[in-house]
Length: 318
Image (cartoon, rainbow, N blue to C red; front, side):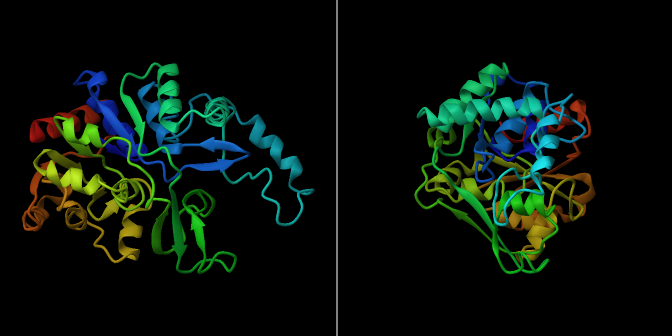
């Protein structure tokens, strides 16, 4: 599975109810990764890990359940003494007390010379997750968002994904998206794409979650070669994203924010698109792009719905 965060995690939680988790590999976007407080943070990897471990805070959709926030609250005492221009002790990105332990471990291991792939596997095993979780690469790739307009402090500037998504609550209109470092980064799972029985593109943002993976050398070529075994689940339902800015971002970048827009983005590398019943009237338009279209319930409102969606996906591609 090519994976972003929350939507992919929900889908995986359904999939592992049907198949041996050890037969599943999630190849995860790391262009959202950031460094804060000197710590290496991998949000999408951690969301998958925590969800599959049954440890996710289901209400927020990220972080650990039963979390406390004493460390973050204690940072507030430094706000009035922090020099102008200093980036020390930011409070706009919340890290729970228990969640910090994951970032402590990841950072220390990376500083010891371990690769992100090695560290991700160690963290996966620490949480007793059976699904194999692989970062898209071990090199640093960073999503950069050029904003078209917003408050005077950032208008027309290029900001990091986390600044766009968390600090500005993805309310800033987007002018362009780039993936710094993607030209030289090495995709770490080409062999998995070539050897797998099926490849699922998760219901993740096609621009900033799946886009970074596709920006790496060899990925689109590998998908095209396996196109009949590639199936995508649309993250757009009735013209809207259930969570996050995918619909607005598609429109702002000149794409149609619909299942047809998703089909146009994926048709060259993917043979089948799974859409929700709410979009069944657009089936013929999807098929006009050269894709098969499968209609089912794609809203993963609970574990049973996630399992049922995974069942349809398996039956449609295997």
